[in-house]
Every structure is written in C-alpha cells, then in structure tokens.
Length: 453
Image (cartoon, rainbow, N blue to C red; front, side, top):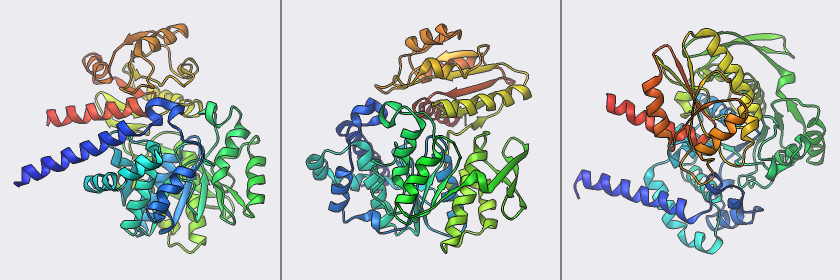
C-alpha cells in the first residue's frame, strides 16, 4: 500500500471509530440529561475489564461550575514545565474527540482511538455505557499505557456520580460553585456544592478556589467526614492586574501568609483567570508539599505558556485581529458575568462596532443569559448541529422579547459568512453561547485560514 493509501486508510478508520462512538453511545452534549447513566457501575465494570488502568498513575481531580477547564490546563502546564510526563483529561472537545485526552499537550493518536474502540466493542454491547463513560475509560487506558508521571482529570458534570470519580487522587480541587445544570445537580448553591464535594477522598487534601458563605459549611462537613482539610485559594493568594497587551495579562501575585509579591503573566485572557490562577498557585503549592518538584518559580513561568503547553482553546481566545475575533465558551450565569466584564473592557478600548454570533442549547435559561449581553451590538443568532441546540429562529424570538434584535441563520457557517461581509477592520466579533457554537466556529475559521494561505 502506498503512503497516500495508508494515510487514507487511517483517516477512514478514525472517522469510522468516531462515528461509531457518536452513533452507538448516548451523548449528553447531543441529547442532554437522557444520556446520563446514573451511578458509577458502568465505569467500574469497564475499568475492571480493562485491568483498572485508573489506578496505575497518580492523579489530580478537578471539579467546579466554572474555571475547571482553564484550571486543569494550567495545573497540567505547570507539571509539564516542571519536567513531568503529564496526562490531561478534559471535556467536552471543541473540534476533535482527541482534544479530551492529551499527554504533554499532544492529543492521543488516531490509531490509539481506533484500537481502543475495536477492543471495547464487546464491552459496549454488554455494558451499554454512555459516550462520556467510554471516553473516560479511554483516557485512563492511554495514560496507563503511556506510563505518565501524573494525570490531571477534569470532571464532566457534578462530581459525586461523575465517571471520573473512581480515581484515588493526590489532591482534589473545586474551582467554584455556581448555578448550572440545576435540573441534575440541584437548584441551590449548597445542593450543587454537595455534588461537587463528592470528589473529596479520605485523608486527601482539598483546594477550593472561591469562598462563598452558602457553600463553606458543605465543604467543611465533607472534609470532616473524610478526615481532611480544605484550603481556600482566595484566602491564601491575592492577584492584582497591572497590564494587558495583545498576548498576555500581567499580574502581581501576593502570598498573604508570607507577605511576598511575585510577577507573573499569562497567555489566557479574561478577567475570570484571576480566580483560576489563585487556585493553581494553591494547588501546586500543595503538590510541592506532598513531595512533587513543582517549584513556585516553575509554576509562575508556566502561566505564560498554557496554550503552547496544553492546547487550550475557546476561553476568551483572540483568534485574529483586524477585525478582532474572540471566541468564548461561557454559557452559565457566572461565566456570562465575566464575559460581560471582558466585553466592556474591549469596547472601552475600541472605536469599531461589536458583532455577536451566538447560539445556545435548549436546556439553558436563554432569556436570562441574554440579559448579560449589550443591546446595541449587531447580532447573528444561530444554532450548532446538535439535537440539543435551540433553533436560531426561536433564539431570535427570545432575544426580541428581552429587547435584543438580530438576524437568524440556520448554521454557524452561514452566520460567520455574513459577519465576515459586514464587519470592518476596526470592529470586534464575539462568538459565544456554547462549546458547540465555538467548536463549529473554530472548524470554519481554521478552514478559511488554510484556504487563504
């Protein structure tokens, strides 16, 4: 077989494997709550059949309503920069399934995915897991086979019953608690906190990113039962933003206990990174005290290279300039509050118009979400190509009911083609509303960039 033939075969085999996963397994991102398999029985059975790969490497476990993705990537980046072979599991992906499973920032190979799918087809028939459950097991297998030094594991939804919650981590991290997925996790902050606190393990240290009066008692009680302690990042570190340019945010980081100040810069934009950085500084400090060689110097250096180290995308990401294109996956009240603050900073510094391409899923409070958006922007309402997506025409009607006018487009590509015709070089284009909108937009924009080159 010629080289082109081999390449074509591999691409076809990978596409078939991904299609098998998409078609055979219920996926939360597509159908919502109906895809969730209650309890941990399925993931336990799968991992037992695979030889319990999740027990073959040390882990850091991360949950939270917002910021857990950025925090996971930053901790992984700090460990990589400190010389450790680091696995990273996150979800959902934006463009390619393999984004979920990375080793030192590199997605697992297509061959690995194909082999894993082939090996587990009988298990899928017997156990009938969800898409998420099988992806978690695939990550555990990859990290075990590649003999990573440590892996950073992000929960998907909640914590207590999340499929990742069969690991025995060195450290548990809970970034913050906000109102999201209330139909599954509960409709109050204490109820949601109790679900997230389910990742706390016996005698295993816990870092919580943000103190909140409604959740403190929840974490305290869980830690007491598990005979461990909780460290609150915002009580240990203070961050002051001192500058921002096209590529970095610059901060002074103050260790409150030691009364020492440090300079750092990060390639992750957005005001919400203040909280995530405090969490990472605290978490890596705990790892250092546990004997891991993650010095503060290395951690501070690593913040400048998070994207390069880990491949993180879609968090207030500047895709291009002139016009400025920003992509952000914010989709719940806390995330949208930060998005609103970031938009105000952008608008204060630019003379052009603001164009917003947005779409949501059906199970969100869309009218409530739109309250965070400015009424005077130019709107392009659209929907991602997933069953959960709220049709663009319905989104337009909801937006009109809260005083926001715009045009509906049946696909993300159509919306982006239209905004590309209307936006001038001095304008700003924001693409947001869900992971799915941002993922489809990234695929379109990357394709356009290749065509232009």
